[in-house]
Image (cartoon, rainbow, N blue to C red; front, side, top):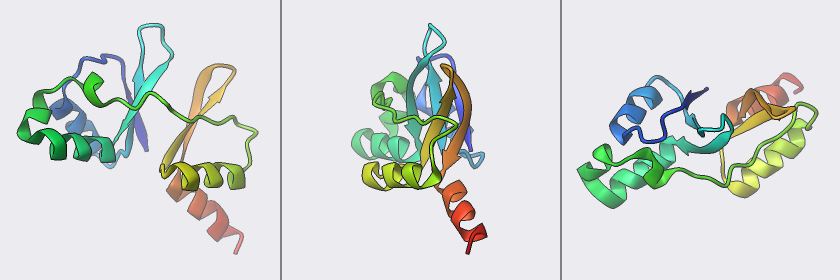
Length: 117
C-alpha cells in the first residue's frame, strides 16, 4: 500500500506516522503535481541509522529517492517483477497518460503468480 504527501518539507516524524499504518511507500508530489520522488520504510530506517534521533526532525527532502522507476498499465507482471528484483525495490507506481493509476507491490506480484500455480 502507498500514500502520497504534497508538502515536501514535511518532517520524518510525520512520515513515520503514515508508514506505521502498513504503508510501505510514500509518493512525494511536487509543486507541479508530478511525482517528485518516493520515500520507503527502508529510506526512513537508513536516515535514522545515519542521523540518529535527529532524523525525526529532518525534512523529508533530505532522503527522498528521486530516481523512481514507474510502469504503465499494459506492462507485464513478469517485467515488473524483473525490475523489482534488479533494483531491489518493493513498490512500483503505475502511470497512465501522465497520471497515477495505481501501485504494484511485491506482494501483488507474489499473489499474481500464486494464483496461477
